[in-house]
Image 1: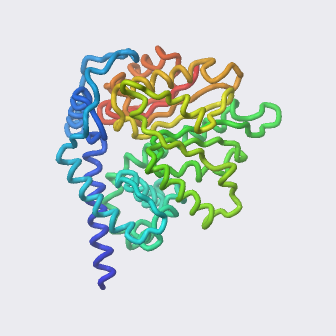
Image 2: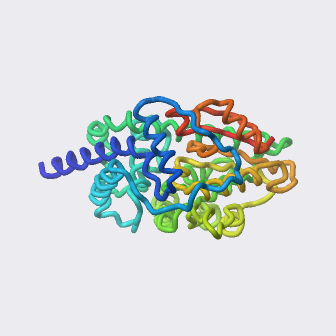
Image 3: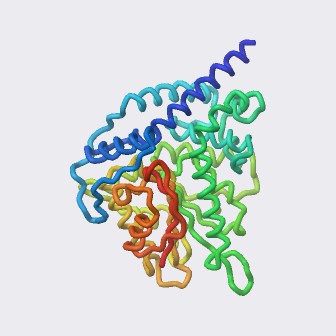
Length: 373
């Protein structure tokens, strides 16, 4: 009886945290300047009213941000959400032996992925293996899933972005640039995940494409530390024959905000130096709900580097040196409306073709796939 009571209490907290996250996912960046505060106010208005907005747009990648980034000042929704989820995940991971020390935002997405997989709404049989055995039943049992069914509607955004990225990656891997035209055998390619959190793609695709995918994952040092331990645990408990050392992801501890400021660090150079990003082979880069948390000056520098890399010749002169950029993310300050022609114009001016596009919440989020011309 006591166990059942605790189970129900935790499930109630879980639902509350997810409903809070639906409100705060786009309005509580880690750090922001006054200009980004204005942008988050616009996003909040769109989420609650459904109205789109047209602000004066500046599509120049070289324009300077209006001021230097300042410290966090989360609104009340963010404070409440963080408090609820902090309590929840301290309970869920109370007896976790993996040694994870991480924010509730990454853990929240991980638990939701496991739940969505259990309900058959996405394909991610790895997510549950990252969860503590003592509490994972909350999202991997009929009893737990039944209690958490109200979460699923709020989690549709996670389902949609997972499907979009997976389908885009599948298309990339099956394209002619990733296979030998004579034999049909898979050819080596790069896949880079920015702000990867506890993304499971590197494990889900570890045996795909004949094992010739070079996965690189970028996130904060604390996240990378926890992810490394989870990978070791997965290999030890789920796939002992998998060559984690030779074929596992290259994990790069890096704060994307370091790409801005008075002494910006080159993102592409970091990928080459620490992640062994290879030249002259196809590259697929994923931005999944991470740019909301990056300062505007860093975003501008990141985009400038990405487009220089993705242009013809940017990653070598080989015939296979093509790049696909996959976003389920904010495109601010460059595109702040939902219209495909605006997104197409933006990418075209940077030397890329827009292959797929749709927007959500009046342009707060863009699902976009852009390729080397």
